[in-house]
Amino acid sequence: MERSKKTNGTTCITAEQFRLIGDRGLGNPAARVAHACAYFEGNLYMGTTHGSGDSPGDCGRILRHRCKQGQWQTVYTSPLRQPDLRSTAIDVLRYKRKAMPTTQVPVHRGFRGMAVFQGKSDSRPALYVSTISNWGGVVLRSSDGENFEPVSAPGLGDDQLLSFRALVPFRGRLFTTPIGYNTGDILDRNGTNRPVVMVSDDPANGRWEEASPAGFGDPRNQVVFNMAVLGDHLYAGTGNPQGGFDVWRTEADGKPPFSWERALTTGAGRFNLNESVCGMVEFCGALYIGTGLPGLGYDSANDVGPAAAVLLRLRPDGSWDLVVGQPRFSPDGLKVPISLMGPGFDDFHNSVIWRMAVHDGWLYLGTHHWEIFNTSLDDVRNPQGGFHLWATRNGEDWQPVTQNGFGSPYAVGVRTLVSTPHGLVIGSDDHSQLKRRSLIASGRTPAQLEGFDDEGGLQVWLGEGADHPEGGPHG
Image (cartoon, rainbow, N blue to C red; front, top):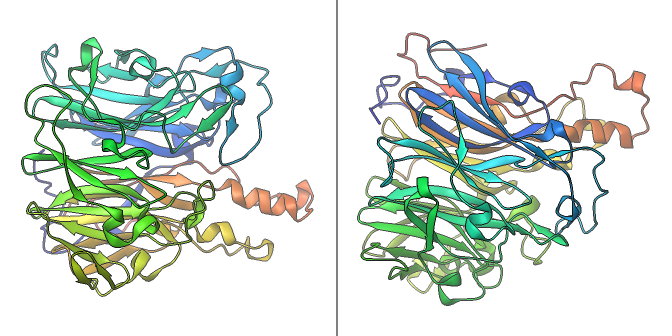
């Protein structure tokens, strides 16, 4: 991708230089999560995700944003199907079976990954997208950004697999990892019954193979959570609620499954308080690794936490630094945070480092921030919270861009963070429904609820920088 011309690289983009380019779920307030995003053929593509998928209004959509015109257009909407037991499975986080929907439901309630990739059967780079489906997530392909067709079997051959997280190109192959499963009795959004890395050199023809052993040989590794490329290796980070995450790497030589070596273990010495690797990105010759716990900084399913997220820096030679976190002794000696900041960037509510991206020489990092879930009934008119966005030019000195979701306290997390030639794009995870739930719980009447904006829905911001012709402060 060409270097952005929107900042001069000497300063990061400030909060005033971000402008809202999409809100209220991009036309559907029930679309809460901007889960997948990519820049393709001169346009921005955003995949929306719904929390339930219980009605026709919960269809996942892919939207195209023509950056120069500032217009959004829906280019794909999930088909519908009749509900069955997969629609009512017991969510491990909610412990109860849902009622059977009375209408048709979306096959795909959202999207988890997007990547631009050219495989063996592609005459040019195409846009690949992984879906979220109770009947097995699939991979969609588009060569023109307008027509999207499934090019895989449900669940890549295992229709219990809910979705596939990151789609990462590396050495002429496309890699992904299963996330979630639905048996018809149990729905798990974060774990999986197949903790492996999958690979294809020809995804257009639906040919996928296992690229790693299950859990890298450790049954405690319940999921391969994220992947990133550093130098001549592909790195994969796991989720392990018993012993803490592992990070493994491979050169992906020969035929799959490949040979892997372990780069970090036991959550880099923090054990299961570093349960999962959530964000990973290469910056200045090192791999930056952000951790996280599901829920509100507490993994209730496995009784892990509470804890805030930490940030690590791993070099190709295996040495590593604690960037953000609590000083501690580790198998590699005493580790003191080089940023001089504690877990969660000194904020306990930052439970996950969800996304990182490099833009114009700066590393940007977005969090999940759950303070708004503590909002009392008396605080509804003055809610506190919103995701954090931090930036650094050297990996050690960090500065906040926003610590309140750009003034949107119900925007609890950064779910997409993508560098484009037009600027840095941020897509949120929205929980505006908390506001109405609090008011209803207080016994207020419909008349008393008037004036509260309960529409909600995901938001999208574009950060352009001061020297962009459209840059500068935005209202």
